[in-house]
Length: 228
Length: 244
Image 1 (cartoon, each protein chain N blue to C red):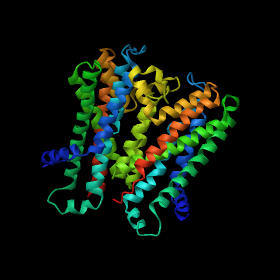
Image 2: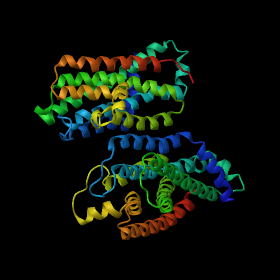
Image 3: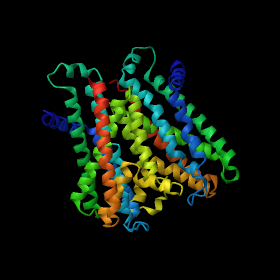
Image 4: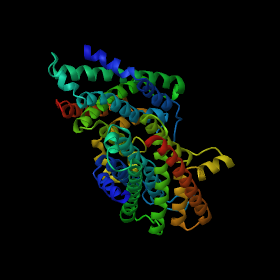
């Protein structure tokens, strides 16, 4: 598990990364309850924050490809599958820890108005994996790291807008409402909404399964070994 | 010489697909999405449709970040290892800096004007007199470019300049009440009205759209002109220190 360990070392060596991990979630916790949805806004917007953190984490793989570390790794006694698995596992670990801290702090700040902390944590964790897969697939298309990273920021905001994280999907035109189901952000928004309106937990299965399927699709797209 | 190299800089800018996709396609995409949602709602305080409001603020906020072009090219050509090649040419590097500044400003204006035309044709946004809009864009873009060139020439590390640029853009949007209203009081009112290029540009464009508050627009124009002159002088000072 050397690669696994080194991801942590590499990521936390930069101070700005640790600050980045904490600033956005902690800022989001203190958002008040808005008119829509009936949970504190931070819990609803947290999906966007997960995507931003995931994009920063997955950039490590992109960096490896850009500075030809991946090329050197291919002569080392480690398979590409192992490399990818250990990297993604480490990212998932970091994101899960952030999710846990976020949910716990959220419960401390908002108390009763948080519907079900454990279910929220499950939703966020499944979505974290989806977001990591998305970032991986996104970075697989690009060669230039800067370009990939800066365009991704805009894409995440657009996906959040269309997916119904920033406002209800219902106010958009009829035709668009069906099309945006193809975005992963729609499903995380759907899941938190279902939870906040107190739907039975069986109904959460559909968004969770769809997010998981998205994750598999993105991983299939993004895990191809590209040396250059 | 400056004109001729500006032409080549301009051609180079047209090949910068990443910059174009961020500063041209992204605002167009955002305006399109927000336009779908705004439908036909009318902003009560200003008396103009929400779509117009969205188009104005999106166009101006992306104009604020256009200075990154200047920063990037100044760094690439005059501050990295490329500078030794530039020094060996019979072409003074300050002239190159001028040509970068001129072409990036024009390119930025062109990009923003394309957004204006897009919103005009697709969403039927009423922009008023397009010549005035062009002049306003030119002044705002000039000030923004001067601010960014001051950043890149004034500080020692490029990373710091980059962060300053991002901070400048976000701070402008924040004090112009883009995201949340500032507290009451004359000081904050002045801050949100006349303190930054975004708010000043917005004052002028809203005046061309509605035909009201012309005096506010004229004051804004004068502030922008004065700040452009001040920034040009300080930019020249920093440039002399750094590029010689």
